[in-house]
Amino acid sequence: MLGEWAEQRPCAFTLGPTISLGDRFSSRQVRLRERIEFSVEIKGSVALVTGANRGLGQAIARTLLERGAARVYGAARRVDTITDADVVPIELDVTDPTQVQRVAQQCGDVTLLVNNAGVITAEPLMSMPDLDSARAVMETNCWSMLTMCRAFAPTLAAGGGGAIVNILSVASWVGVPDSGPYSMAKAAAWALTNCVRIELSSQGTLVVGVHSGYIDTDMVADFSGPKTSPDDVASQIAEGVEAGSLEVLTDEAAHQVKAALSLDPGLLYARIQDSWDRTHGS
Image 1 (spheres, rainbow, N blue to C red):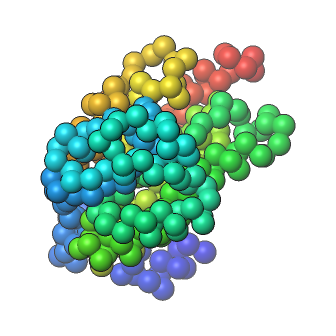
Image 2 (cartoon, rainbow, N blue to C red):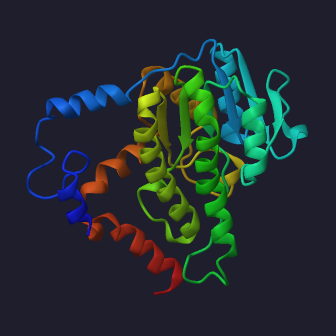
């Protein structure tokens, strides 16, 4: 079915032997790349960061202010958890569409939207007692991201285009079975980001996907392996926005996983399968 769709729309999508990774970009592809790459200067911008009360969101809000943002709205479910006096606290539950629309109207000067709010659950998909927690993860990490993009797109267009930054993960690219719902949601959010980027290209909006391994936040406090500092990730995000980057890969794990996507799945997942079998007794 996908092949038939591609044949009917050859300008929009191409499958099969006519294109290989080694082919040069056509003039049309180069023009498209130029059209979807924009840059946004942090200095003087007005940003809204979801999940800005701690961890990466707090670091992003602080970094934007340090780089000269005129105003940074910090969104959280409880405004009293926004402790930075220079951040404008905004009450927002990103899973509530009514609240999202209210905030979009309230913050009509936003030129930079950072969709950072997220949750994680350490549950395998097949052994969960039910799907309630998986649906909750999808709601926060994927559907609310789309709701925010849709609500703020007109505001960004009115301001000249602006930028959207979606916080994704290496789990967008590779399934982590012990956190199945998280991987599932981040993979969907990656697809969402790429589709939204194409749709908003005509209004001049830069859409950036941020992929990281482990970031040193409360979310992965129990993980003892290498972690990147939130401040480092925040700085890379700011630099990516100003450079017009479509993706920001913040650590070695992100670069390695991205490079491995072309591998046979049997090779890509061999170590994950071995780890699963050891810890789950298969």
